[in-house]
Image 1: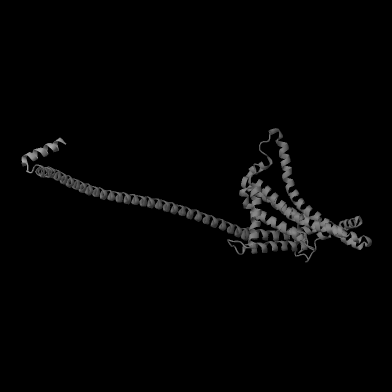
Image 2: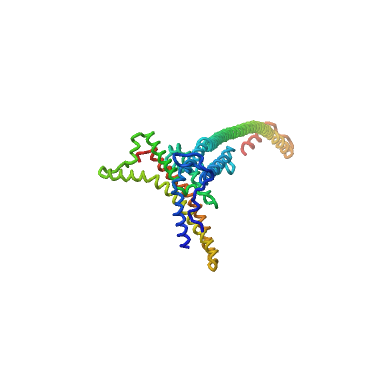
Length: 249
Length: 178
């Protein structure tokens, strides 16, 4: 049986195109699925926004539904003025969602199962928060570490905790998505491997429907996880952006 | 099965756990930057403005339609009120005309009846007068007739006619004595 982690291997389709520092940049299966994900999203959005009809058709309706969904998420988590970040949250949500879902197809590669990708997205969010917060509020942005209404003697402790929690945000944001995708795909692979092993195992072959059924159920669960993690990523992004807009808690 | 997992873990250990293979980071970061930048550009410059414009346009259209509907309803209400007022005045007019007509007709019939009554009473008075005249006339003739009858009776009994003066006196006393 192939290793459960084989599915996460990066395959190089080309030789080094050029070098970033010392590292060669090649077109890989990961890059292919990033391009595919963005292609699917842009194709869908192009189809959804092409008619621009007052009475929407199916695709337009779906596009408007997605828009309203993300916009309401941003509005609830980041506030009404958080809508300036709607393009960012929308891009993150659709990118993570489609990358997750594409990864569930057989033989597909899951872009979000690599920590470097999720970490890059999480750092994009955090640097957006810091950059926007400092640009808009200057030194007042540091108020995010000082919750209001805390007694003075507690303040050093609280500030320390707030700093740690702020620093751990990009870590938790990236690791949550990465770990969910990784664990889900490994579990799928292992249970699917059980089916093959049992079928090859002679007398135990009659047991093989059990892990097969489990694999089917797990696939459904993974679809849920794929959507849920994309949503969680979008909600947490909105919550963190809320700090950039309103640093005073 | 535990064996297979162990084998897998061993293989992974040999080639390195792929997500932690730092040699691939540059490629992934580069392509992520390219694809995500394109996605962000497309979403922020094309897709979202279009969707937002359509939604805003629809909202505006619905609002104006609702306003129009409210305005038309107000107009309809006004027209209905005007119609009701018109109807009320028309009804009042009709009632006053009917009342006038009734009053005029009853006045006319009253006048006609009154003139008729006057005429009748005049005639009755004339007829009564005639009767009274006839009666007095008849009564003046009673004396004469009685005198003639008395003198004729006396003549038949006595054989000679009494004098007219005696007869008159006797009739008069007889009439008066009655």
